Image (tube, rainbow, N blue to C red; front, side):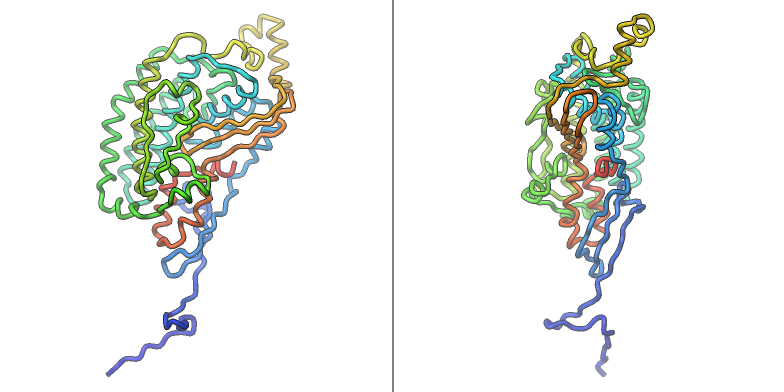
Length: 408
């Protein structure tokens, strides 16, 4: 006896005889643990398939760019820590070079090498956190423990150098806050020596893991054309096969004297983005070793920077000239020429750019931040459509963004 099935009106047949169902609206966030920050995804679902995904941002907006217009160039350095707060040393460096470009200031070779060392250490730290969080997103808890153990070792080195673990504020316009402490480079080399075997062991937990491969290979595929059109940079762009790396293409801070390879993917999926970041950590260690081996002697700040950086404390307390200079720098800011500059650096998340417009004086008239995470997130409405709801978590983890620099 045939059985007749009855369906509700909400599942009526269309002209092709297929059943039509009502689409469901789902809000993921803003406190969802898989959003890597305070991000909200407003999605439309057809069953378990995503048909629409709109990122809702702004929950971390602090008005950094407007704040910069109301304080001196030196005072804004700590605010750059709060952009990609996983790589503050790299943020400090990019901002300092932008202002130095405006001031037509050349920093000595030792300062450039120190900045390269700290920026590459920041890259390793940021990629380790991205790797650990990505692992948790797809169910690999052990990877998170491995990566955070290594980050703790880096944070100890950061604290020895800068006095802070998280918000370092180490770079200065015209130099860095202080020279390297005795024996610090030896401890960095010791970290590199023990880190590479642990990195390989950590990556081995994922690279041939059947579950991880199934969750990332062919998921969140981004084409070269789309990556370029949406303004993607960093590992997310290079995973699509575009070998763009500002350290190679537009070298700064002496990067041209170091040998390293640019990690490039082929398919542009979540698995490629993971592989690219893993290789970038290996290359960062390679750069750190070269920079320490070639570390030149000399000053860690430019002599001309005395008109920008406050004098040493002992000079302020013993010399009237230095006391007056300190008063003017603190109250009015370092006097910059009128003009406009743009500089961008290859940060862990991509190209971090600073566009500064000066009308003279000690305060920027306008400052605009080109945040890589903001640009990388712009592709979410395209890359999420057609994916399963469970794949969205994997896609977000593979993009490795930070909402601190996205919202600014």
